[in-house]
Image (spheres, rainbow, N blue to C red):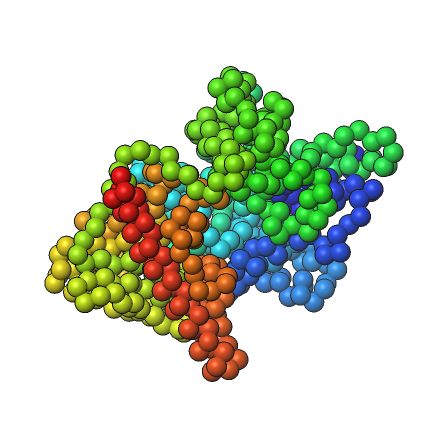
Length: 565
């Protein structure tokens, strides 16, 4: 069946969206589904525009076609302009529109096309590039499969040692594989099958960089009926997912509403439901006690849930009563794509029992928790802006003189130099404190603070920041590691969950949260009036102070448990 096309997001998105979209018996949502809007809401538009602007500025012969979209130019004319730019061999094409592939059911508009090796036919060849506001690589000693390039010289690739692609970011690779197939169809795919992601992986000068991935490299772990799991390439993953979406669309298009067979897929609550315009259609089709709906922290993935469904388990009540040992022989062979598959199932079953019994937080250890204590203690928490800059280092100091909140903050748009200056002020304060009181302990919750401290030290090489990093091993205490080793939370083990439901702490703000604080920071910087800016500034500082006070209350609670024996 020809005549329909899928966009680049289809292969990476919930297939139920494809079902609803092509089902003629299903009313379409009032707000059209646009997956690209989610990236925009997450800061993607600004990040994308900044990166593209820098790429264009460094390429005098680049072609910028974004204006055609903004002007509402008909698609045919946008395709023609893109093809003309590729025929000319432009080094960089931004905002292009590739020809539809009706036979392959594809349509797409990559963020950028970068001139690469010639196509197999000898003409200009291109590599597709997508821009995302998150990091896509991580350290792996000895790895050498990735390449990188700068925004100013995107086509000059160099091997990126000791780094690998973050497999949970495979979604953008599926988008790029979609665009690659479109380039192949129109004859402009490079002879070398690689694609680029501009992510928030920065060079030493703080600039985003391009990460180049070979679409044929097998590094994504997937389910295999014969072997339990198998490593597949991004291109293989894309082709499998795209074929399935085509199948879902084809079976949906023939539905009449009368004696239709069961649809190819059924709704399962996943992360993207939060912003999907089809949620109002899917929600009534999901049981109120459905596992995907009620277990939201460390949730089982779609294959794990489908495997349980095949074993007759779809609700919290059913999993709470299930004999896990009895179902494992049938369950494990079908979930080998996940590491620790058995442990994940047992954790989900524990959470199901907690939900069934109305328990929020449960201790799982019997030995002392053992949080270290000292005469001088600091509770530390940072706040970051939309671009990831740390604009506030908040510390609650406890010593012989009492307890007081100290902040190092700047409520303005920070340059990399500004961010460094602020971090240095905090580091010098901490270094002075530990010099005078070598027994000082610094408590934080998870590694967010230490990651940013090390990032700034690595980027700048500033002596104070390097010295502060040296304190991490002997003076910093991650409270989350103690909570993680001793508790299970039905809604996870985030600071707000554990501090409120375990230690009984209450934030002053009615809507406390890291994402909310970014909105408040923006208001503190760009608010319309001085009063609005001052109110937002106060709200951020009070929220940060409550975070460090929550950490303080939490460790007192943990210490009290040991004292109670």
